[in-house]
Length: 319
Ligand SMILES: NC(=O)c1ccc[n+]([C@@H]2O[C@H](COP(=O)([O-])OP(=O)(O)OC[C@H]3O[C@@H](n4cnc5c(N)ncnc54)[C@H](OP(=O)(O)O)[C@@H]3O)[C@@H](O)[C@H]2O)c1
Image (cartoon, rainbow, N blue to C red; front, side, top):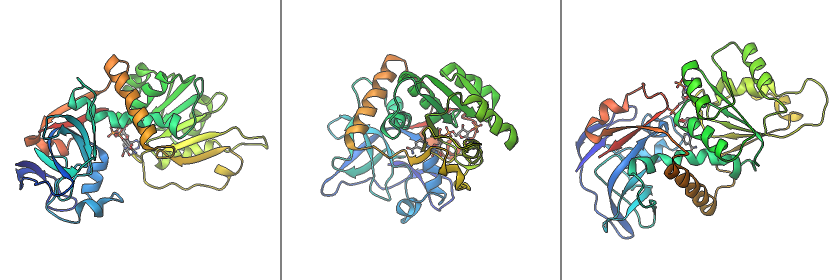
């Protein structure tokens, strides 16, 4: 079969022949239909993700740990967890029996494979206990995940949505998706602090954080009260780290600010995942949740992998 083949950590996968997978006991071979290429795939392949060792222990290997494909009986499924060195970015892959869920009928595989990202927006509810009317800050709203999150929280009934990015043109697009206010983070710390304070109104109830790094460090500092007062909660849900893997967290950022930090996995269970997925599928089908995909054939993987011009569109490989 043909596959995207990674020969070295930090290398670029190449379109090459790779042995066909053979299903072992309790495994099934998947005929791959669509795979979204995300930052996490690149970080695993370049050795900077905490799970890199798990996926690149044996090289050459095929990157990609989830996608949409067909079971031997033709049923379309979203699959995950291919047996290494197999991965999703190939004509075929092999996964444990049961490591898949049916794709809703009539859904385009390239759309279905991106919808997992939309579930991160649902973390307002699963991880932060969001209720309609609350104010949500989407930190890092110009990427695929952030754009989806703005739409998701709007559909869930947010009272006010503040969205951040570092490019005015893209922030205009995010406003059109439903953000009430936008903040450009590409300004000096003092101006950014001012912008977070000016936009917060009665306070951010929930922050969906796709950035971490400097913008989130400045945000947390901005939320330290300037006088003694009873705090109102701000639940910061950590989802991504586009702006940096580490921050300096001063003690007073937590002590009296009301800030609570947790990860997007909080509150997730097979049941809440299924509910969240069902909801985003419904919105995608009704056209209320939209996103752009750039489809490329597997044979173009080497150039596609290195693209930096996607501006909020998801790269989807269609083998
Ligand atoms: N936990 C999960 O389930 C999950 C799922 C999806 C995504 N994520 C994570 O969420 C983050 C965003 O993912 P995505 O799919 O939206 O990625 P994406 O479509 O590639 O977008 C990346 C975003 O980050 C911004 N960015 C990149 N470098 C930056 C920097 N140094 N400072 C400030 N902004 C920067 C980009 O802004 P420009 O457009 O201006 O370059 C863009 O808005 C990633 O860390 C990803 O791993 C997590």
